[in-house]
Length: 139
Image (cartoon, one colour):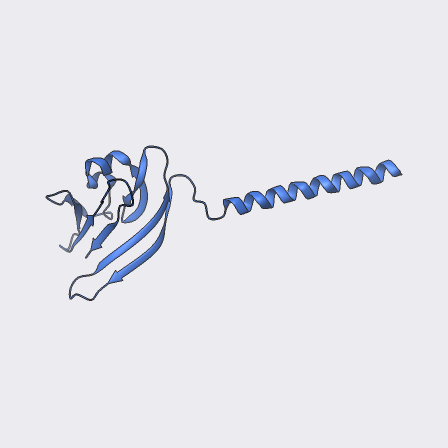
């Protein structure tokens, strides 16, 4: 009888330790992004000028080796770092389906042209390329 009680106590303690480990692992995961994904942290729009909207967006990304935060289909995404270094912005497919992408003359950004003729211009300003690179959207 004593042996049975000891086994039940041991099994209960093992189950308790297992549950503590599972709960602890869950707390560690919260707030972490899966590798290769991004989330929008802040989005600010300024429509004070007529026929023009300036949007500033901050994203948090957990990119894999060789990738950096960029834009794909008008959403934050991890893209090949080569695209950012060479400023070949259209290679990351930043425009929506059906829109045309063109580099700005000085490669400071790109334009997305909708079939109806509306143009969205995006500029990138990087004091240090590849570090805290804000992207500004103008419609």
